Amino acid sequence: MDTPSDISAFVATREASSWWRATDAPLPVGDYSHRFSPVISVMAAVFLVLALTSVMWLSLSIPKLDRMDAPEAALARMVSRTMDAQEGLRRAPAWKQLILAWITGNSESERLQAIAWYRELAQVSEDPVVSLQLAVLQAESAQVSQALLSAHEWDRLADPFPRLAGLIRAAYAEGAAPDRESLERFQAEAAEWLPAGWFYDRLAERLARRTENHSLVASIQATSAARADRMFRLSWELTLVELLAMFVGTGVLIHVWRIRRAASDPIRLHSVGVPPPWPGGIGAAVLLRGGALGALLTAVFLFYMPSENASLRALAIPMSNIPLLLLAYYHLFRPSGLSFDEGFGLDVPWHRLGRLAAAVAAVVAAGLWGEWGMDRLAEYWQWTSHWTEWFDADLVWGSPAQAFVSLIEYVVFAPIFEELAFRGLLFAILRRKFRFLPAALISAGIFGIAHGYGALGLVSVCWSGVLWAWIYERTGSLLPGILAHAINNLLVCLTVMALLR
Image (cartoon, rainbow, N blue to C red; front, side, top):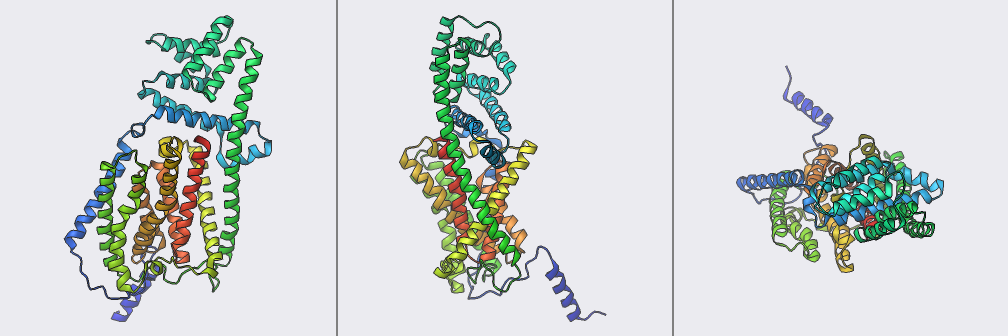
């Protein structure tokens, strides 16, 4: 017959071998005499579930094009610049082409993706220029017959579609070219309908070739080449930055892995770390109440804040997180005798700045390698994220002041407050109940859903969330995750501004 001590030993062994249950949570430190109402906790939990469900429903049910002002101009800018970058890549030395192809993938898939996006836009847009640009894109992507078929269908539509059909046939149809006077008229119409850029250059060059106007062909090619070379130079510089970050950080990752069982952790920054010294039940109540208040404030900002006011929009992130942080300080940090700096591991001493830099390099590299792998898999499975998810109007069209405010929002406010909330509190409190992987996946999943992206964007955000949780656990400090988050967002913003602004 088993004795109570035998049963206790068996239960302890089962818990120690569990893959999901935490066994390393410290005993609570401090006086947590405050009692939270279970009814209010349940109401807050229901509100949060409804809020996250609403985000998912909105991301799935509302057409992405309906969320944008002037999607026609935005897609034209994006595709035109992408095609310019591809032209510049073809003009580059072979070794640069190989490196960029390895980093960015197959350019042919980008063209097919652009065609699919233009078809989607043409179904809902009344702007005839969208159909004209789609036809030019198809013709320049070895789909001339499809472009000519579209032109044939336009003949039955109201003006200006028959005139646009004449443009496409004059540029891409086989057989004898129209007379010089007609082609000059077509050149004028192309300039009237299409803004300066890749679409106009391709159509104008085709028309000039039909008339054997070699001087005009040379002039168009020179303008196009100068723009393409500029786009390639910007792409190449951004690629070099990513490559440097990947390989420097990879060296740190290899070193950390090789000495993972050493007595001294080379990237440990703080002693408190996770799991935190707070009771899990109190922490959960704080999370539910603070999260519900934050979701309510976010909804108020979204419904009542002028969408064109970038400054107010940027303040939505810190303002919606303040209730959670205040509740956490009053009910978690203060009773445990910790300040925010101590509890979140933000007070890194000067002599450990080298460790901090190594930790940031490691997690940034891991993030870039993960994104590279996801891009290759997505390319293989033809799985894409929608272009509207990363097109930011303020970064592309906005004034310098608007672009600066957007950069502050993405590179300063979002990394600080999202890491404090999702890793510093949500992940940390989950770690009192779960081992690392379940806690990281749950917190990263909620983090991803809150962003409202599509499937591929959700996977990407979750990957980042798991990495930032890992570096928090490994170092005991939120600083590496905050800095890696900021670097990740900065690279995205610089890419958007360099290629589209």
